[in-house]
Image 1: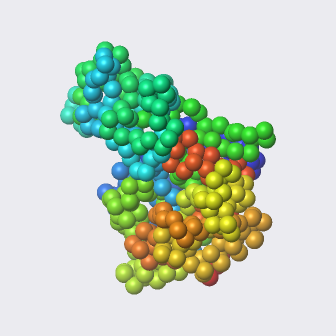
Image 2: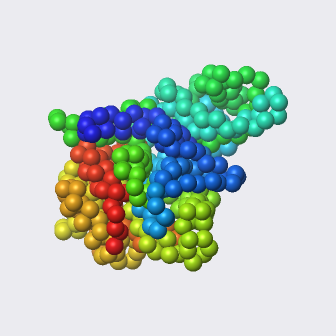
Image 3: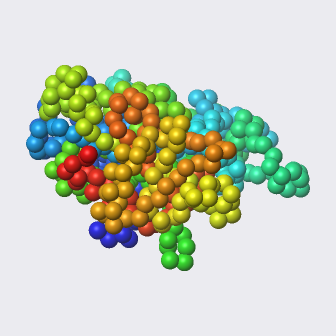
Length: 432
């Protein structure tokens, strides 16, 4: 597999996935092209050994399974999340000031706010509408043109701007959208964009979940193209790598890709890692292809392993003191094993040993990250999924800079490194 071809697919996936709903739809499309069959949660499932299937929930989370050709005894799971921090429209977003229509926003997740100023912003998300026959449908919307901007205040009017002034999300982050406009203009524009993108007419717009998106496209950066710069690398990069590995695996083992929504806001939802989605799917699979009943399910889970993939903090050349001196992962230095004694990451020595052995077999360098003892530590779906299912889990990630910014940076070679390791994990006959 050409690394350049893989990176081009990555850039295209990032560009076409401005929201969790778009990301899930794009993953589903590639799975269907590869022969995976879509399941519906509301229907009875009839599964066969060796089948490839997937199911979505809320159109923003997905579980894909390569079922083993033999009896189901263990699963190799890779987990990631589809959501990213950003700015989402409020239900009644229209507000006017100084002759401009602005759109009120909520901050989704722990977004780094300062980089959002002075950027060309588009609009994307999910819209629900009622057709003339009374049918209600949800459709995706992606307005790929610069629609709005959050202008900075000039330094002449804010002499403290470079001295660490706090940003007020309520009063300072509403994007400027339309000169002289009002709420009817927003509703008219949304209806027009939906009609144009889906060739519809005679519908009523009922509700929406929309977010602003950076219109600067993903790109390779650096003299030798050694960097990837894009919005939403955290964590669409892991979703893409997990999907690539699943599609390249040999299909003989039981392989699972789970991409949950709502990680950036705590995962407590019906389609988040703290919810029942993955457990619901695996129980149905276990009942049909493994040992039926709760005991059979517990035995399956304890024989399985989960690699939770979420990006790691790379050593920043301008801020080396923000890392423990012995645990500063570098870009293009290989995947990072993330460890935390307080279980903010789910890694144990047993699961780390498995991953190190996989890296050795795949001839991939591996790094470690532990936060400084005097700093707090983030978390991800790893410990949450481990708590919900009881599956032995490892937290890893590709190193990156500017996590939770509107534009993040990662190493181009690390994409290939982690894909090779996860493919080897999916293909590994024994998990002990």
